Length: 275
Image (cartoon, rainbow, N blue to C red; front, side, top):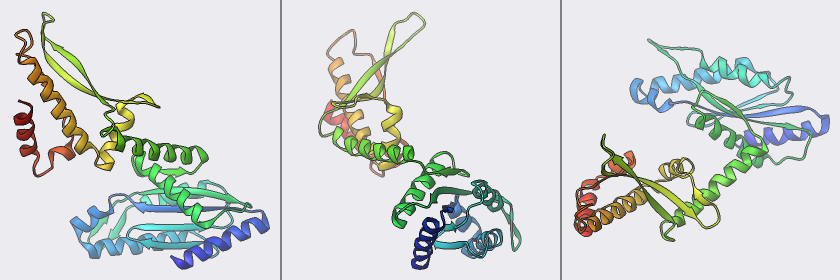
């Protein structure tokens, strides 16, 4: 890692001095853990060695290949001919591997940041390549994504949104909307509950924006508990109205919420506390 950092600083210096294009590639192997889990660590280790051999065989002596740890590799290309070199690397790493008695197929996700004769910071470049790698994995893996300023802005906005979402529960910004479920005669049988986030600055935030964030961060568990509690309280209120007491409410439960060891107990507690 230290040598890789020194090489990157040198590459940036040469790029500035000779006005030449370069590229930093950060990559990891998609679902590499599955190889270790199913075929064993010796096969996983052999795969890492084969990836290193392919990378070294594809690049020039002046380029740098480094393994940062796990299944994460870095490539520094000092004199970039064209941006298609990155795609060639992706295709080359995707070809099947013969590992002892096993033929293994694995794909890489690659984040790329280009540099050209400017005063750029090595740590900042690695951070930008990491953002591009995250985007590649988010796009479905087996992808190659280039960093640009719009991506930086997107990552920053995502971080701000997650920060605000952490405060949404305690600041009472979540709302439940009730979508009616009817029979063939359009008589209401019950409702499906829809979660919305009413933020003072952002307005009504789309679930498409905040639900994936909640899933990734684990916030979906306390949010899901709030939804269940609020829906049960609404049902309890309807019990006092003869017109509404037969209505039901359907609540979506996240897989993360469902897999909690005490999920059943949580539901029983909500039923008891709400009446």
